[in-house]
Image (cartoon, rainbow, N blue to C red; front, side, top):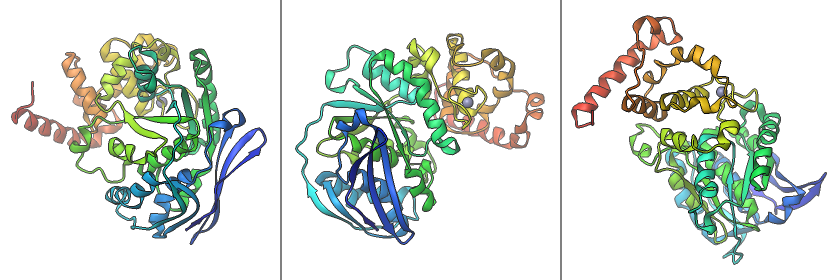
Length: 396
Ligand SMILES: [Zn+2]
């Protein structure tokens, strides 16, 4: 795989970071575009391109030759340790060599602190800890918010990226924080080697963060999972987000420190903390459907969040973010659902409900009327495992 020297070009009020990638799949142009007003934050180093192309090159089993400069620290990690980590997560990847035109120990010290902001629970939690709260040291206080289009909007693509950004923009203006939209065609590169967003999220997002090394010195990822989940999951293959705590700091350079925050809390704990942030009552956006900005109220993520807030007695605060009348009508269909799968977020909700003395209306009749009827054996297995767990010392 040969990658051309990155260039920054101005086009239609945007600054574009562009490279040409030649591989056995042919020639592709990879680009990222940023509004001109944020152009002074951009670096033309090759770090972004190498981080973006690492998984695709490993999937193809092709060495990366790049006509550009990369950070010595990043070069060292990507050449060895990071490839080992990626091969554990995606076993079809092959070890490759990275051959940059030059390697540099960066001297620039940038002071900006940036985080991606989607309006979700994890993102609001990071904003709460690193902006709203007073005790955060200045060197860790968020100065810039980022919103990118590198695959997380799924089939909603650029349309949904714009809609979600525009929905949250008034909040960021109220907070006085620059909200930087980054569009990109990176998804095409991953699609061409059949790598999912889930398996590559950290590298996709980090490739965007590394663009901003001229102005940003710290980039905070909002974690998805508690530390312990890495140990609990029987099969962590294929999901890079379980590994965020390890996978993000590795991608730091001499200029940009990258790490993920919030791993010490469960999703339920984060939801409860966020429920004390008034701005979240209107602006929370946790929906996973690809149709609209804001919350549909009925997808898995919307239901999990409403359910958690309901158990906590805080849901009524969110009447601008969700259609609560509809939720109260359909919630009984959802109540048995967390019991059906042993996924970390649902397990946390069940634990929380039990701790609050919240009763699940788990009745065979109700289950028989839901699409989950065929999964009754999963319920049986879940209950059996849980009882077994309690015998070996789980607190009752
Ligand atoms: Zn939804």
